Each structure stands twice: as C-alpha cells, then as structure tokens.
Length: 103
Image 1 (cartoon, one colour):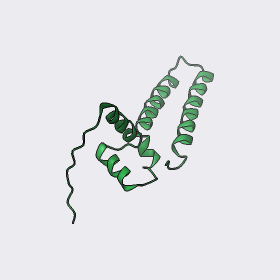
Image 2 (cartoon, one colour; image 1 turned 120 degrees about the horizontal axis):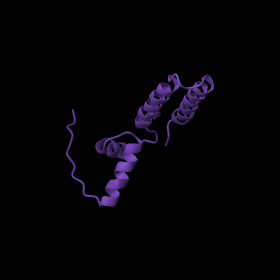
Image 3 (cartoon, one colour; image 1 turned 90 degrees about the vertical axis):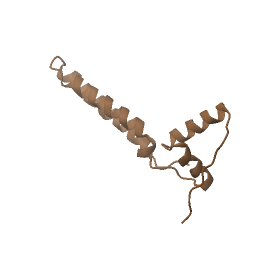
Image 4 (cartoon, helix red, strand yellow; image 1 turned 45 degrees about the horizontal axis):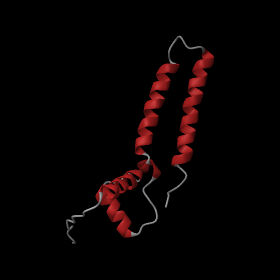
C-alpha cells in the first residue's frame, strides 16, 4: 500500500488565486485539484457537486419566493407570477447543471 507524501509548493499570489478559482469551479480543495491535474483526467466532477453553491442559493431563492407567494396580500395573478418565476429559475439552473460533464 502506497503512503501519501507531503509536498510543499511555492506559488505567486496570482498563481494561488488562479489555483483557487479553478479548484472552486470544480468543487475541489487544493490537494484534490492538483491530483486531478496530474492525473490528466479530461472529465470533471458531477455538475451537482460542481454547482453545490448554486444549488444552495437556488434553494434560498425558492424558499423566499414561496414565502412571498403565500402572503395573503398578493393577488392570485401575482402569486402565479411568483411560482412561474420559481419554475423558470429551476429550468435555467437545471439546463446549465445537467448539460453533462465538462472538460
């Protein structure tokens, strides 16, 4: 069984920022991303993992819009408009998030 070796790496601030931006896009920590790059893989994690933060934000938006839609002061037309907006947001997100794995 191979043991892990610790690696110390010096990077410029600009390179660290780029590393962090790229790894965050894939939902990985720094070690995972470096191993991913070294492995030469061309496919990334499942989009549901990649877009974890977007899923969280969509859930919050969904919750807030539902609270608004349940207010008695809204007309039936406004309530329907809010629910339509919720479904449109979901459709946009699902279209983006389920388009397959990215290179």
